[in-house]
Image (cartoon, rainbow, N blue to C red; front, side, top):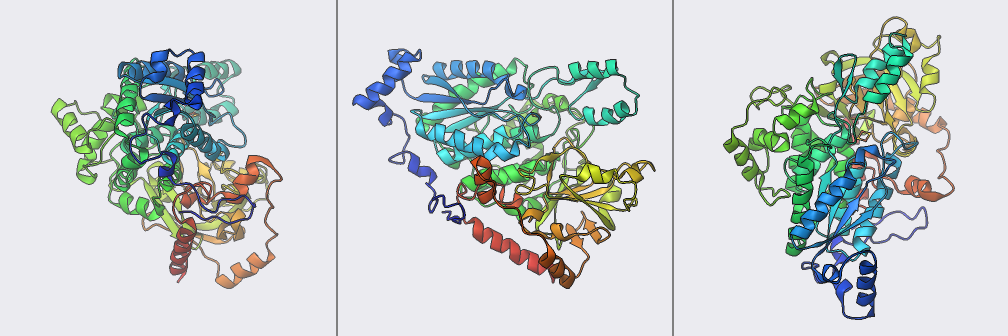
Length: 602
Ligand code: FES
């Protein structure tokens, strides 16, 4: 059980356990919200005032539909229709459905970043589930942070839960070809160079995101939707179905019906999301070349259940897992191809020899059952999904780096980086997150094609909120010479839709005293994404001298949620959750990581 520091004076000496939320430990149906006293009567009366009938408020169980629909979040706007389908499913299975809203976070609309608010959303979800008169919940999410936030909240709330994600938006069409989310970045240089005129650029705006739904590549939203399936929280085959596809209504009905079964059986998130299920999710992440953000989110979800994943688990599994899916940006294929190939069930069938086959998925079948069903259906091969014998990459597309520059780890997405950058040595060019683009324009900046961009103060505390870095700032002196790609090392995150030779999530970050804050222009940096090393070649004495000269760290913001975040947020290797929300000894885990760092330096 967690015991956090008292820096803020906020009492959190002992977090509530997940099982504390319902009395008796059995299925929560017929809980005290239906008692015959005045309180129960008031509750029923209010539900009836909201439109439910006498029979509906007395029917068991009541299933909450936790919707992150918002007109400020087009990725999730299809969820209003989906909620109707879920309601039908709940009703058909003998339950009563009630929709309730939560915070909704859109990746592209919130400043400074949606990541700053993920934990806040998770707290909203947890408390609404915990405190409301519901016996189970259907989680409706889609955009990047909404999926982990809902899973974290539901894990902590401890009531039966199942998720249905929003599904990807349809592809656009521009200049005679199909376009996806990532194409905005590949077209931007043409726009700035004048090769795309105003009229064409307007046309792109109209076609770039033609429907509701999540980003239609192997970005964070897709990666997390797949993870929700694999850990057993979303129905098999749901992640890749497009947002506007009629199959999503069927999935809604089936999800609603399954929610009633879960509530009746008293099956809770900690019964479902077991260590073996998380191992499968990590395996699938590796096999898909999915978003590096899953390292953070999966760790945070597991942390709510008392499971400390740690980067070592990602590394060990990744080393033994070939990348078999080739969806952009970790391949040339479209996300729609993955759906046509059979989606997650087809992927599980390919990976079955490497998976924990007994893990139970959201429809009650095991991984082995689902894989067998796929094989029996004899699907036509699809080039986006290869076999274990003929993968796109023979090891994980994602690798964990450690060394003197990142004592507690960093992540490198090999599948999205040219192979020539997998091993690299070069002099640092240091940018601060807040002035990177200004400094990159400096005509006197010393930089060479082998330079390593060090982009710091972009972490969960420093930025704050670890905003996604859209693209690495290349010094103008190099851009003018035609150099468009450099190795980058950062304590920030990058969108799952982005590629490039970048070591991300360097931990500890600069803002909490990590060595990345001590790097100076010209220092030699050595990166090896084959052996998993990242080192700053500066001796300890010099680093100690620089640390002594470093200016004092920023103090906490004066008020509001940002103050809570600043004082309690954990580092990237611990999922960036708030320390009083996790359910394991995060302080001990930090100590373990420091031991690892010391060993690495020797
Ligand atoms: Fe919402 Fe990409 S911006 S999924």
